Length: 345
Image (cartoon, rainbow, N blue to C red; front, top):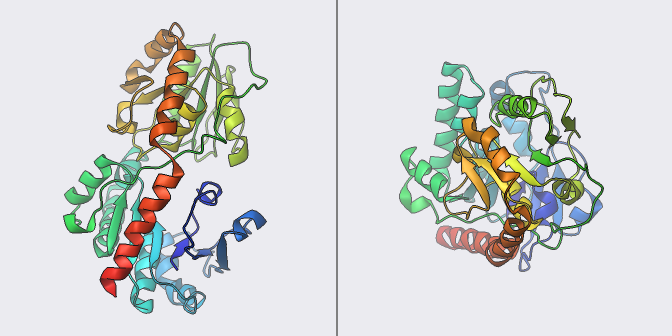
């Protein structure tokens, strides 16, 4: 029974076939949906010292109190999404409970910090701690070949790194549908408004293309001014994302770094081609649209306006239906978790 710390993909994970496995989830914020409670057992954690701005100080001062709230949960393995403090707490619980812990490596946080221009000294400290957490994990499951390679470069033992387990997409939920949309040629971006996502580049491109309608969905992590041709929709519920994708002619992803972006899979499933920065597109994915340098995005948008986007979208949807299902994902993850438990036993 893995103990899993609540991540942002809960709506997706509830659709999986977990083959009878029982999951307990420790979470800090919010109340789990009733739908989720059909699949998982939840344990709310009260976070002490929330007044402290430093996450590092907050964690090291509170880890004993945090652990006391979950120590009686019966688990065989701890499974966490890669994130410095999730990893630190998972490792701490792992030692206390004497059970293995596994990290789902889903992004290059070093590149995120670089793009966000984190203080050099702070960045090095965070990189060290994060890498230490990966090294101490019993298993690291990357979601792309590039991240598997990066993990080795960071010093994680090859024997601890699995072959990539790719994200999936629910093609019954994400599909072409008729929606009310602008009559103008429309480009959509879904993701955080942040430096790592190159939000400022995106808005500059939009400003230079006044005849193109841009729609943007995602939480703000920085203050920005949106040009008049950009429609900002805020952070949308997961259930509204299929409608969002279908409002566009294609989807844009200018990020400085990504693991294996769900945005691309969801866009493909909705029959939408993509324009993605080279740094953000995994090698193992097939391109339907364009993958290029960020400084070529403006000319690529003009080129894609003349392309047969409907045909590209149809091909993209067929591709993900064949290769990227959540069922494949869940079977692979459960197999790895089971192997770790058996090895420790």
